[in-house]
Amino acid sequence: MDYDTYAPLASWFESTWVGEQMRNIFWLFPAMETVHFIGLTIMFGSLLVIDVRVLGFGRFINMGSALKFIPIAIGAFSINLLSGIAFLCADPFRYFPNIAFQWKMGLIVIAGINALWFWFGEHDELKQLADGEDADFRAKVIAALSLAIWVAVIIFGRMIPYVEY
Amino acid sequence: MGFLLWLEEGPMGIFIRESLWGYPIVLSSHAVGMATVMGVVVALNFRVLGYAKDISILAFDKLFVIGWVGFIINLLSGLILFCGSASVYLFQGSFQLKIGFIVVGGILMKVIMNKVRSENGAADGMTKLISAACIACWFGGVITGRLMAYL
Image (cartoon, rainbow over all chains, first blue to last red):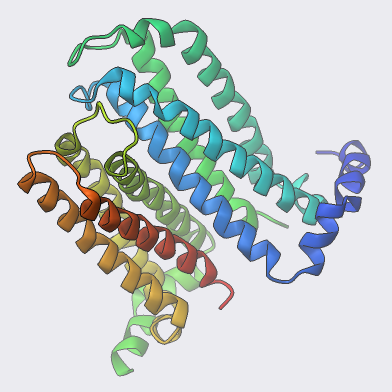
């Protein structure tokens, strides 16, 4: 990304109160990292229950109950969105030009669209599914995409410190 | 100590320190494995603690296959990472705590499932208490693992 395109936005993030705290309190950044990791595990766990049920491997799970993990996934995502914004404020000029960060953000947007497709296209129909009944093919595609995209998000996130130059 | 240095100087230790992409790739695998193991751990314990009660706790027996796949990914990637600086990690407090948390957390998973089985699928107060301790251990493992970079 071109420096001039992201510089104004990056300067704003850098100047925020959160950014200042993240840079000045030495333990805050590592603390946020652990929060980000805990959020990651709760979110991935919730998605695992839902996606594994839809894909059929977890057919023994009651679909209505599996879908109860959606609010937990959203809650955990919110934790990670907030801790993620805190990282960004700490050092935006490091993140904006970072290729792994850019891919991660792009994939999260795609995962979000995929989740909306699941919610508006499949959710009501899936809720009616009887115990042990197979989900339709389209729902399975969404579930497989969800797992694959989030695994990629984790990988790109973990790569951020190693693709700087 | 001799063994630790032997690990560090062996091919695996050299690979993980010197290959450009070796470390980030193995570290990413470790994060994906973590998400998989922790995913199953979180889901089981949320259920035992009373969330999504329509799911049978004993049904999780089948989900453990996924958890074990994640665990094996992390055992292997963890061993490779360990070879990189074995003599540092072994004496690092955060690493020792992390391994302790994982061992205790793993045992508690087994204890929970055995108790639930003996109660025909139900979770009583004691089981819930163990479940809370179990998830605390596993979160402790994630936290101390992340803090190995700092402490």
